[in-house]
View (spheres, rainbow, N blue to C red):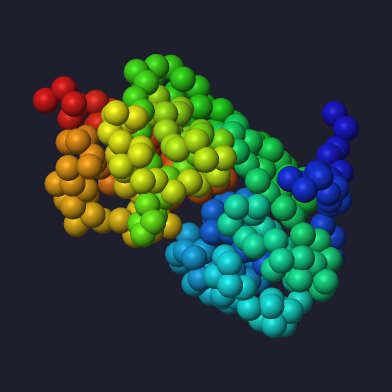
Length: 274
């Protein structure tokens, strides 16, 4: 078999194998976790404040701001050779500014759940972690197969990610694709936006069977669940809190998320049966 000598990222940019003193700054929480899972923690020299997993490892990695408010001077001082970004999570003007002094910028943009395999292989090829990446790819396929075999009945869900204004996820998002693996079909107003606003007077309970409140990016909690359950605009539709990390994070967290979603869906079905 011919050795892999590089890979193409989501921006169509070819990246050859990293050489020399590799210094990575990650601006994506799930990708920071994935870098660590691939055995690259020692090469990660910078992260965002939202990069919280694995906690015992990232605690010692300097912060460079948030996913959208990056401190360019802090990044520059770390002298990274590689920057890891995501189309949805990072601002293009910021990434363009970082390109001026970071030699290699890896752009990611998984949409389908299976895209995580390409993501793992990209990092594996660039950072010489091909064997580790393939092992995670095998786990990804096993979890996807388990979700397909479960054959859950379809259910329409309104997955809320923000309040004031209410916002949801469109069908062409990674979150929607994750939910679909367990028969939960995300519905949204047809505005053309990937993350559209929701007006319950125009997009009412006849459009969905259940509401899911994500714990991120907005920190929905039990009090929000209680308030929405009492809101007549939702017509008594069930409202349930859902762990946003398990639906929106890429890489190794998505593999864990697939198994988590199976258990979550079984819990929802059991509640409906009672």
